Length: 174
Image (cartoon, rainbow, N blue to C red; front, top):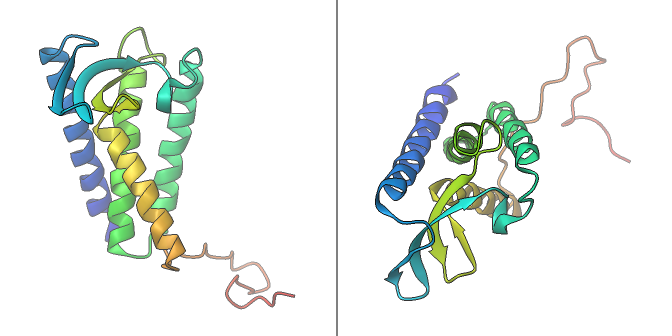
């Protein structure tokens, strides 16, 4: 299939950018110290997040690692059904974001499967995120908008030929 090279390349680029920005942050910032970019609205601040969005689930990092693994596998499975180049790109961006944060969970302190995600973009004190988070949220919003606009994102799964030949497209609904 022609979707595979683009899908994997896009995911790789997102992971590369995410990990590079995290490494820059670790090398150049002191944890907790804020550096204003656009006043209070946007700043750079090194934070280690053991939880999910808004630091939810701080004490369940290993569960979040398992969930991140499941999401990563799910993205790969569903990307095979992408209907357009845009959908392939979006799945690649989402996969890159998922892998970017999964790398942190697997390989950063305090240990394997319980690592804290490196966050550095402080949005007006509401939350602190990273490039992977931007990729994940951006893709989720894009898929939501596409769905609301009636754009088909995924193909219908093929029905096994040993069935009676009915497919979701030609089944009667009553």
